[in-house]
Length: 84
Length: 223
Image 1 (spheres, chains in turn purple, yellow):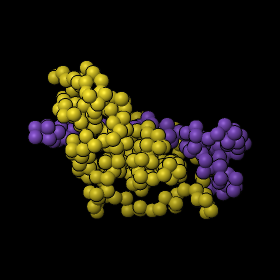
Image 2 (spheres, rainbow over the protein chains, first blue to last red):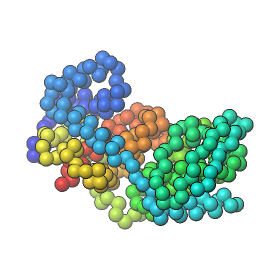
Image 3 (cartoon, chains in turn yellow, brown):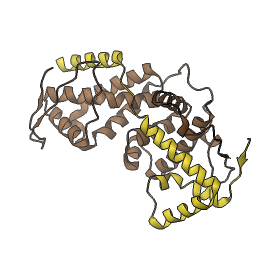
Image 4 (cartoon, rainbow over the protein chains, first blue to last red):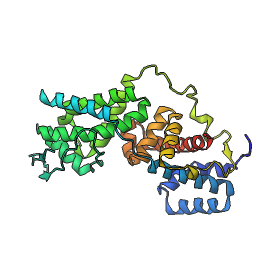
């Protein structure tokens, strides 16, 4: 793969905790450790940044509207249920 | 538009003046908070038809979104949504934690999707193992160097963003897709996701991380 980087074992271990770090689920000490590493390691820092943006993109695009036809059929079904 | 009210119940429901029901096809209602769902469930369980209708109308949005993420196809998603609404109607009196109605609904939708699953046209041909894309404990990690032109931040606009995210999500295996949807888009806690997916919280965390990295890789691959 073009431009692929093989991270160190330490990077690999820390990367597995990235999600928990981004979710604020780590202890303060562990969070500081990861923050220090992200600040020092270009690859991991970039990975953290890109992952953070991916999560933001997910949350920004979270709305999926119920199509009108589906909603209409569901409403008809609900009314039929309630008539019984 | 008709005005309906939720009446006070012996089960501890509160007296609430409800908002008007939107006619079919009008603007999407915001998701009720757990307290509102709790009141609707309790009232519906006592036989209050108005509350039952309101509960089902609100639940259909939630059920649809999740069934689309699990099933991936509109027809299957609609079947699963209808099944979940039917179960809500039948079993509302048996929901032991009304405040946890949303996780109950997600679990019901998921089960409906699993039971209704059949060979689908258009399912991604490469349902490859997510391990092919993700860091493993012992194996090599694929980690591309930053590429200025392939940045999630540079997705053009909201419509484009949603389209590309949908495509990227479709490329994920269904269990991972469901976890991303529940956690990132519906905002469920790790514990709630574990309840819906019937796996441990540790498992949720591990799968969520793997799914997020795979999603990122898919987003950056699509050009």
